[in-house]
Length: 208
Image (cartoon, rainbow, N blue to C red; front, side, top):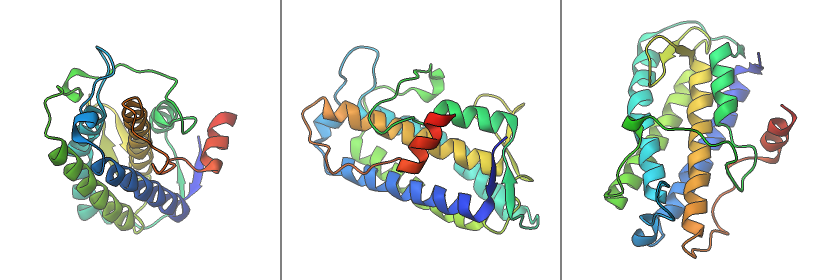
């Protein structure tokens, strides 16, 4: 399993979240009709991809906040990922900034109709990133392996705090790239869309 210096990991994840927030702010400036555009049947619009992320945040953020507020485990300088956390994160993490190659099925409760209020969806997502940044800061005083969070589709599998954060943010990177690519298909120039993966992250993924 992967091993990390806890504070370095949290700082890197916070930087990832800041890039994701910038990406969402880019979407705010786009034409709302184009954000709701579905390129073909069975594919999501950009705003559906963001609402999918909101669905995950509604599950994870309150649980993370509750556990981080209640648990007082001593800080640990190192974090080692667990089996499921490492597996799920690798499945979700994009391997490059241009496309999502490994397609996955989505649980029905996390798939939303294309009748969304674009501004409401984006505002909720940006607020979620602000909350996530607060939680990452709070996590610096905890042992990232002692707190466990249940995943969305079963309470039987719980991820370590560090893995929950890694997985959640990798999932956001994945679907924000998807949203960017869908928007680009409408003719919107995405040159100013933030790069969501650093060169280091990309090279590490390609080696794995």
